[in-house]
Length: 159
Ligand code: MG
Image 1 (cartoon, helix red, strand yellow):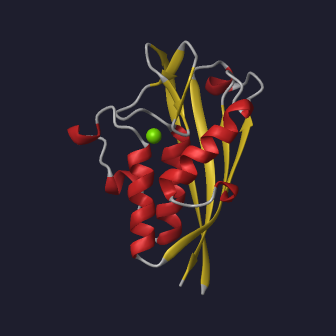
Image 2: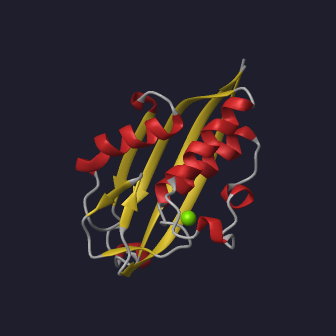
């Protein structure tokens, strides 16, 4: 048995007229991430962390953003696919630790629902998914409410 870690990062610009979807959950807000898919930064960074830990490239390798198939795609599909690939290759998800950075709205109250959604997509227990949120203290594009970002570290075991 070996243990492997992967890191993932993502950022999307926030624009009016887009739904704000984080961790597969739609939140009431007047802006949302611009992007080819639904722009779910948490799902995208988590995919990159999982692919990185497993040595399977990154989200763009598996879901190219020029592919019309993924236009406005629900990013939970990406997570489900990543989970299946890992399982096929003998990897098990031991722990996920994430931080989402955005100025508004507050994410904390939505974490229990997000953890359930992510855990279901990955077919793991919800207590393996740990979520945190930070503001950017008004600094830079995230602090001005122009962008949302996420960092994720995933720990896998390999049989
Ligand atoms: Mg992205």
